[in-house]
Image 1 (cartoon, one colour):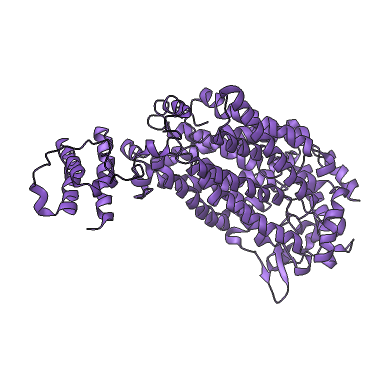
Image 2 (tube, helix red, strand yellow):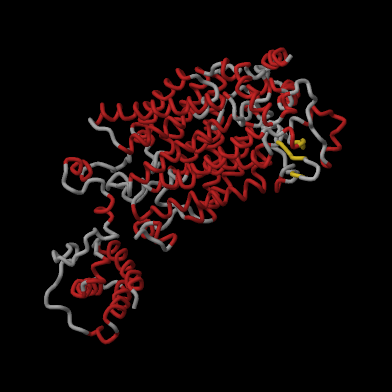
Length: 125
Length: 514
């Protein structure tokens, strides 16, 4: 299957997880790291939401094929919101990680302190 | 002779009798007819009914006359009767004389068209369209959250197309044809009567801009009609249904924008007759869009999480690029509103640049005083504030006036986007009222203070300007409220909370930024 198909389903997982469980996942990393993807699928099913389970099944089918649907979960559970510290980790922040992508200062500088407090709350300018 | 007629016309400016305004219309005609047949009055003054009534200042003659003489030799001959040719639909009006025809679109020979004016107006039209796509689209797109960037940009793009169709179908006719004080006629519905006949060298012109083809004038005004509703989208950004937005904008353009444009810019319009000065759209465009945006913000309601969580702008570089495009395009907006490539257009351009630069410096200075830093968003906001405030004044004020207006724009619009915004309590997402509404009001009133008779031939009146502001605030505010109620009842204005949380890009358009 194409990466576009996987990304499309993962995008649905992303928005649904954020909405229902306030969890943020890395869509790109899902397509590259099977271990991370399996953990996201496990998490999605564990929440008991019908649409999440459906997306998880579809993603599993695209990534692992139908036979892998009953494969046991990995022994090592990857963190959900933290990216693996591997050298294979994507260099750029997740395309959906809005806070990382759009907060003007996320580098911990002095400007960032304002951004993390009341900047852009209730006003833009 | 023109000056005597002008003096007589000005005596009538304060008389609120319908018959008197009809007389003024006739005087307009008397002046407009020689206006495009003599070198002395070769500069048409569109959108400036007061300046159209009084004689153009002699200072303009050296600027416009050579270009006219070079481009159209026949136009340099004084005392030539107006070349108003009766078309088939106008034959019935022949008994009223050529003067009466000059108060409505008419057909003239190719040789009466000014090549210089036409070239500048073609350029100006492209510049003003550039303000909306991509200027305003980028300006707004950079300020919303990542999940709503595409929908915000698409709104400006779609409005461009929607208003284009509405304008040629009915908008232009309602706004820029004579009928009564309040609304234009239906004579130009579907641009009926728009003429270009190569074989007989005949072309139609608007009575408001008699040295350029009517097609160019229609296009120029269309770009104004496009950007005005597009400005409103900043107020309800990130939470309105796309379908509701399109329906609202369609109705608003016809019911709100076209009548106000008629009142202010059509020489026989209600506010024009009151002596309200609005060179390029401070009232028609910015106050109008600003108050409509405020009403939209109240009606649509605040965004989910507004005031509790941060709404970081996606990319302020987009906003800076957008603001820069707006700035450059504004030269077409303001200098183009002279509807001529003459000295007054040059003064408008100069005033625009001076006021904008001053407003940016003022805004940054206020930020520095209050927050100990200047910001890029503040600089971009100051630029737009200055551009908005100088818009109604650009063809009327000198450099000193432009400097003061720039300072006032920086101060008041900063307050509009911060203190006033808190006072009003509405989630005007991108500060449409705070910048366009407040800037438009400041500019309109200061036009009455700083209008220079030497530049425009017109004297400003603060009272008249305030009347224009109040009328626009009330009509646009109430009208927008009614339209929104209807759209809300029929379609519903807001997306669902889940769709809003997911972002309009994916929930409304099934697209997302990569």
